[in-house]
Amino acid sequence: MVNNSPKQYYFSFQNISGLFITILTFFAFQISLLGYPVPKLERRVMDHAGILSPTTVDLLESKLKQFEAETSNQIAVYTTASLQEEPIEDVAFEIYEEWKLGQKSKNNGVLLIVAPNERKMRIHVGRGLEGALTDIQAKQIIRNEITPSFKAKDYDGGVTAGVNAIMAAIRGEYAPSEDDVQTSGRETAEDVIPSGIVGGIFTFISLFIPSIGGVIFTIIGLLVILPLLTYILGGTLGLIAAIVLFVLIMFFRRKLGHGIGGGSSDGGYYGGWSSGGDSWSSSDSSDSWSGGGGDSAGGGASGDW
Image 1 (cartoon, rainbow, N blue to C red):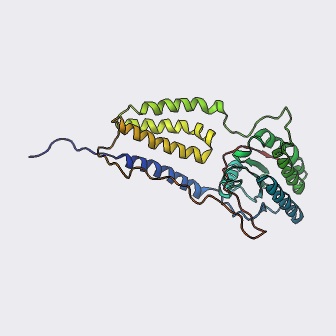
Image 2 (image 1 turned 120 degrees about the vertical axis):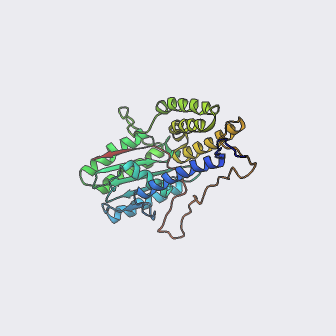
């Protein structure tokens, strides 16, 4: 007897969630291939552009080492001969992510990056120091402390003044003037909350839409929510939170009978999440230094001269 009923093709929840994670991993990998060639972190002051005198480098190393010993805050200075045609904000983010400045539990790192050939600079601030070194203060330090010296081609004086001001701001001894404005380009709560609400509505509705349409609604909703998640949690944690939400929503859809898959199994759907070797430790050598596993999800400011 011939069965003329149409064939049924089922996709299990495991297939969908695995595909979603694979796609995100693929794009992250592609971005990493095209990114800035981040050098290995060896010292607190890495003058790859060759604009600082050895005396200044040694003096800054000593200051920053003492500052870290007193406060646990990690500050690094990096000069680059080329930004590789990337925005300095992206380069600072990539370097900070790779170096993991600041303590892992505190996220209290700062990166001062200078690109003399492009005449650009940025102060990139870890999330744990955003209250002490605000975007407004970072902008003022660039404008009032660093830029005048750089325009006079005094890179030693500009970087030294910038580092001193950064440390003073963290200690609460550097206040911005009233006419300074926030210009870092970071999204504010007013920017992301409305989109987060819309994304939440889409995600909630997706629970009650059967089959593949509901999954599409879920993905759209989470993509709209993602800016709010990254604003609250930071880039990496925000992305992880979106993936976890996707997994949870697929679970509840299945409980409501709107799952895509036909077969069911009680085990093997969910794998454990674990963080890899993110913790950094300093080398025994007194000349080498490494980050403490901090998070880059902070603010900062950029400028040129």
